[in-house]
Image (cartoon, rainbow, N blue to C red; front, side):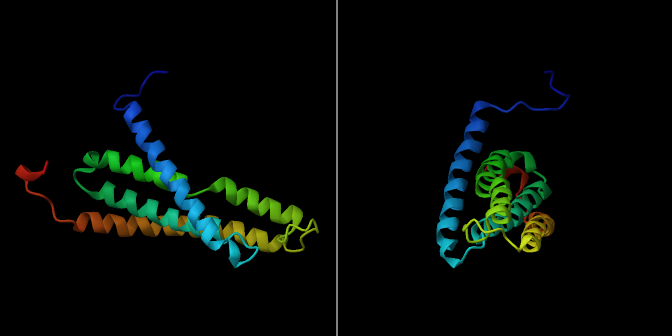
Length: 158
């Protein structure tokens, strides 16, 4: 496959940074899931990590993308964006938890769930709130990046 003009190829080091960030993000997600599992049958852990991750990714991309030297921050963006936050958030768990709750009931008893509407609310809330929080993160992060004092030309590498 040919590269498009201006397109960069990922290096093995960059892929390693994404993998390393992803490992830490997945471990953090597991920690949140464990911390919130006793709250009840609702999948709070997945909701929390997906919403927090949406806000954090929006902020990160808004912040780094708004700075004049954005290319300089590529390593940080790769490690934290698709790496840590990609490992932290989970669409697959959202889909499986909602499906399992509809099929087997919130309690896992095998009783058909009468709360299909509640599961739809969970899915819509997760996706819609995630988009709203990502937009908020982009706006706030962009403002923070633009408000960051610019370094003097001679000290850019310091």
